[in-house]
Image: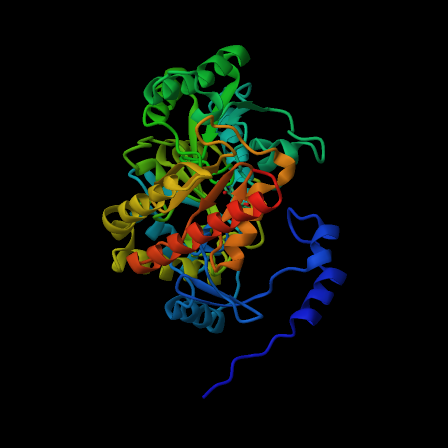
Length: 464
Ligand code: PXG
């Protein structure tokens, strides 16, 4: 019998502290405790170096759609690496996987998307969006259409341009962001912005109206595009009212403004449709779609932009050179893994199973968390879900942010064998799309226990 590899956790932590700057992390604080070392994954579960088994309620970082341990994806990478690990797509060359993935994406994408531009990540995808959108309007003889409107608390990535497109105040505060030519409106988060007594429907229309107001403020002929995540992910799984996106579409159409759907999280089945814009609650007809993460189930880095035919035609017919690209645009090994991933999603009917079976079940089980004394507004859509931790549920008051109640809950979740992410007052999950009913049950049990432990800890510390 093969023996499991052994990991010296203390030694790994010491080296990590000595050499590794983690993303979005206070290094000094992390080094006091050291990171959990994740060493193995299988299905919806991961294991740490101390042997703890954990249900990965976040699919890695919203990306491991097929779950861990898929031999078909591993084999696709190995076969391609043996054949041709890398070649570029710059100078009148291409590779078979890049070509085949382009064609496959056109099959699974919404109608009218026949072209793709490849990047390595979602951030680079959104940088590419800015360059494509501005190039398009230049070619259309409207170079003054430069500004892209996004939303506060949106997450579109971490490069200078993508972080600017995003609406995270903490990111803008570091490095003089946003860059010029980006404007932000408020997000459709009813708990923050709805008026007393306002219906969800009316709030959705009013929130979409902020786009029209911003367009008129900037001058409609100066606005190039609006970008949004169908469901805001990193912002805390903000599920918009059903009236929101159709009204956004109407406003974009009215002013001839391009609509960009950032599907880095919502793409590849996350909402039970191939792309989030196809979900009945969203129902938009975007001009550009950014993707990454789930395209390879995170097994290798790959991202890109699906370019709608209307835009592609202008770029191809009139554009000449598009002076943009990355060494690894269309990396053949990453593309080979994406092809295997899409085949698996399609051949195993995983997207349909999410829509008709596991997402409704998750929604029902997740909503039960509303019975917990700390919890309100627990809601799921597809394979994303979020809840709010309330100090006083009846009065809808929150804990002081400095108490870090979400982080306490997140740490309890880890201790109880489930990954849940904390975003201010919200706790969120996005489990692998292959999760079963039994695994959903086990995940919910572990979340309930973690909420109980959080409540007990708060009582013990006299905070509630
Ligand atoms: N758009 C969206 C909607 C995303 O969620 C990006 C773009 C950027 O993708 P890359 O591949 O450049 O990271 C993302 C990434 C979190 C978290 O804490 C979320 C993301 C990345 C890191 C952390 O929830 N989303």
